[in-house]
Image (cartoon, rainbow, N blue to C red; front, side, top):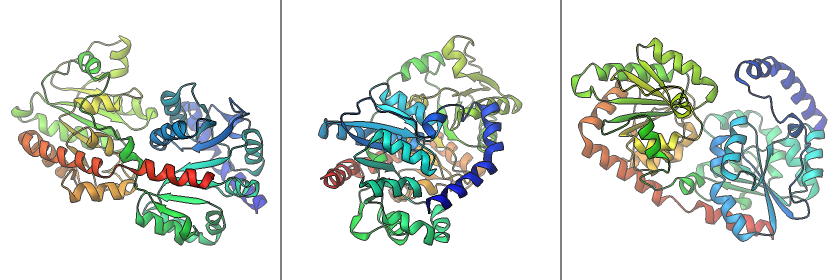
Length: 429
């Protein structure tokens, strides 16, 4: 079976190699970590027992925070190592854990790369964040007697039908997973339907509720506000935005600015992907607005523009929460376009009135809970976004009540970390 998997992977790699090459040249992606992706990685403390945590990208890496903290407390004799798939995932892991933990690129699922990685790392348990159940990886771990657990597990509405189409291929792999820790009952039933064992599938809730910090102010936000001359004027922050979405946001902003009472309103756009910063900068200027790039302000290369037609571009990594903490109203992106949504828990936990579009299949359970409690606002299109922003600005009490209800939802759903840790420790025993 592993030979068939390797052949499929090889053909897929050949097919997407032009795309990889293009992104490497134009966006500086896929340039790093190739030896690690081929399994050449070593631990910092090879004499210790080992917990290997894998998180694909930024969102999954962020979800590891409370798990890592608890594992360090309860398993001090273990070395914790973190792998990620994307460049941004690696960068975020390095930001969170620095040199404290071994951080490396996840190996390709070719049998030789997986064999090499397991031989060098010798983990005692593997924790896969959300899903990432690869056939050769899981088979190798199973053969070596190393338990594999899916933590904070989910299979989205979009992914589940695709997995169902190849159920006969997926089922043997899912049967080898020792533990599925699912975010909700629906995700748990999907894991079971695809081959997960019922007695090894537990509903824990989402770790992202636990990692969402219930705070009013973020460290460094005051410095950001000073650099951008953000005073008492209302600030709309559009965070984690995706392609085609920024145009909608700019059109809504332009429409709002045509009314005298919104003359002081300011807008900050923070795209989800760093490689799109230049594209969005160009879009802002073509839309007729003055552009302030925070990266240039931060480095001292640009002076702040305080004109009313200025749009701030958040083109730095790790500052989104600072922007959110200053916002009067937040729009969470990748949701007006069918991309599954960005994380709306972050702004909601900070007590911000949060708006998102209808395409939030990556956060179904959270969206249901927020909307049921009237703790967030869902808009269907550009016109509804305009109406929602206008209502929040015109009725601060409504915005405040919505924000408070949303923050309460986050508080009520916390606790997944302790349930997950208990199950992981039991599995290790």
